[in-house]
Amino acid sequence: FLTTDGCAVLGDYGAARKLGTNADEKTRTHVAIDLPDGLNEDIASVQLDKYLLAVTLLEKLDLLCVGAEKLRVASIERAVAKLQDLDDAAAEFISSLLGPLFT
Image (cartoon, one colour):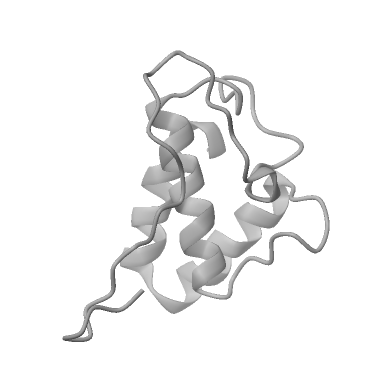
């Protein structure tokens, strides 16, 4: 979204949940079917929030297509690699959101 003065604002990409409780994730298109061990889309966590933010940013940058077919980790990794060619700082930031799960 853009504010009236043209600043970008990230919209709601999730729901507020107490950490460790049911995440009640409804945006399944953004969840890879082969998530790494340690990331459970059914339990609210800081890492799940960061993962969903990273996927949302890659989608908004037109580097990742979600919804057309089942999302896989390899697709996310390819999107980050494409971003690396365009903007090192942005790729580093998104990689930091994905954290140790994607190293």
